[in-house]
Image 1 (tube, rainbow, N blue to C red):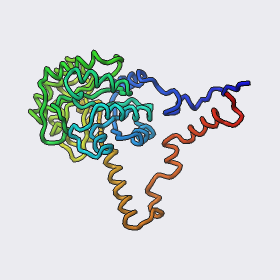
Image 2: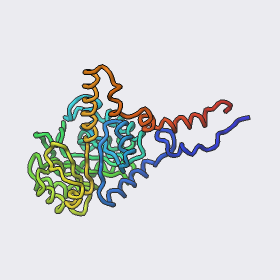
Image 3: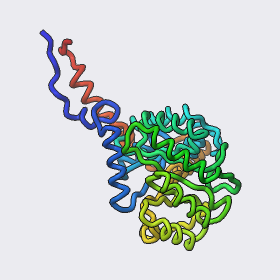
Image 4: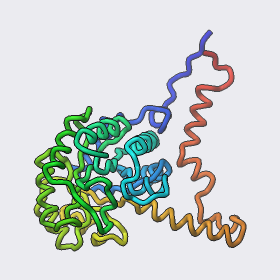
Length: 315
């Protein structure tokens, strides 16, 4: 006689096994967060990072394009990563977390038609929001010194095309402009207005150089959620969360803070190992065995295995 296991409650929330929030629920959650106040958005380069972000209590995570290029491929952020590589990466991150995932989609990987295909593919991979920028290809990090941007109307057309391509109307579109580095803050703000007219839900003016420029962006683009990108050592002033909020920014992005912190910690640990040839004296500076297994849900996986695959069960 067949024995069917009773419902396993832990599977309801087990990342990678049970039912978490649906893609639409994540997107609707992100829209709610954007309207509620200030969203602190840390960036993740891999599933380890996105698990840390979730367990640290943040409400959403950012799939950083620069971090993907640096951490997964060992190359700089100069437009070398393909759509297929990004889509595979997004699928891994979205499968490792219940958080809404904001995805750096660069330029959309081409013209408007290519951006439509990219948006559909990344949406299906699990993106709650897509960030598209107006740089020419190949793009580069917004805090580098040399950029080129496409005409405003071309970016508007791309945004309209992407909106029409999306399968889920709740997917958020973030329009980023790099016009400040190419022209001036006036042009960046003008483009922000144009991108709102084209259907962007959120505006991201990259790399304002001064507090005065930040104040202008917040004042002149009031009424739409705004992103400020905090790059340690970059071109934009580093302020407190309250100061960014007062200036009008609802999303404070720390795209690669976690990667850079882990880079330094890793380098220090390896220096210790190279110098001493042992790790015993370093254990108070690394995660414990239990912390590691808990982060990746080993207890829940073990409980699920025991529930469904225990001796005596027959199918």
